[in-house]
Length: 105
Image 1 (cartoon, rainbow, N blue to C red):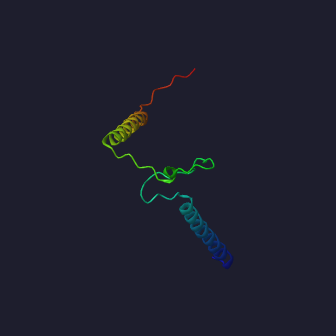
Image 2 (image 1 turned 180 degrees about the vertical axis):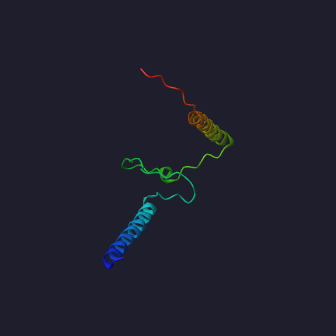
Image 3 (image 1 turned 90 degrees about the vertical axis):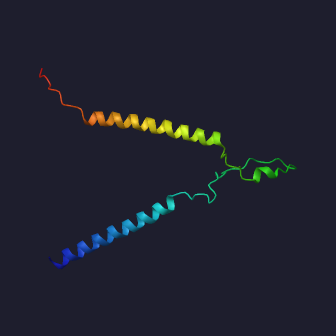
């Protein structure tokens, strides 16, 4: 190879590596942080009128860990999984479809 081809190849490799590093760092910054205690983050507080002080608005809301809430979440997850299984079966039947001879007009 000539020296020019080597330099062009080297420049292309450097650009690709640089783009890969830039992409990896931008993907890490784009992810939203997860709360350490897994409680929902409140994005906006309602406006308070002058002269009122409600300290309960500043307190984080407790997470519902009751048996009923867990059963409701499990039911929702089961419904979504059943829907996924139905979609998966439809896709599998489409992939296993046998060709039909076409008639010419």
